[in-house]
Image 1: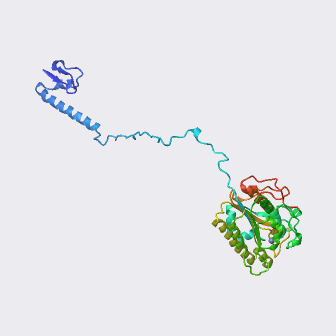
Image 2: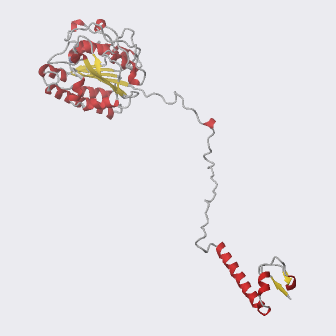
Length: 381
Ligand SMILES: [Zn+2]
């Protein structure tokens, strides 16, 4: 007879010639002949059961089998045809000429008469402090001797020491004529610019000739007679008309200092009020769309002590100097600024040629340039 090895899927052999490698052989030899058919059925059942268990294991039917690790599907990342990756040669390198420096189109110079640097804080001049925050400034700029209103303002706007402009008097003396030399208004006027002066003391007329200013007006605050207009009204009107160079002078702090003393409560209140008026000028610039391209310089002609000034005391000589506008690098200046540098810096901003005889120099540090270690020093006399 024939039988099949239960562990073999193929290979039907004769019982008498069963293969040596059949694992049933030892078992078959020990089973009685009349039971071997039943035993063969059991072996087949075991074999079927073993096969079934093996299939279940392959299907993950047991918790001991680790779950399959699913790899993320491989998706092809397509570059949109509309935006091809730029080649290195297509990316232009930045050049210095690609971003032009911001440029001011006009300059506004504001002088608070007799303003000491410490009074800026004591009077809480918020608009001046705001200008300092956004601009470049020094609280140790120096005026000239004599530290008086007219000689100092002449040095501020003519750009020279008193030895050259010769204005050492401090009253309105028409017969003395005007300051000598080429001043900032002369330069701007020659270049076809519109020049404006709005001042609180008539003697400032002697800073420059009438022909050098398109508009000049003073409001006499010394006579204590109520005026029909004010410095700030005139200045705002000129802002509305448009200007290239404007000088505005607030006299109130100096007048209060002479009457009540420097740094007195009355003087500080006067500076606080003047600061509000200055804020009105800034607002007028903003309303007329001129804030972004106007350079604003705030300074003073001298300080003061007791109820006077005019000496070479630090309290009289030290003044604030602040500049804010396009291209200015904010921060405290290390440059020793002198009052004559105001005209030179304004000329630099407006692109005007600097006269060789000027004793002042542009404050280049404010524009992010290196500090000029060889810049001109203050006046010897
Ligand atoms: Zn003064």
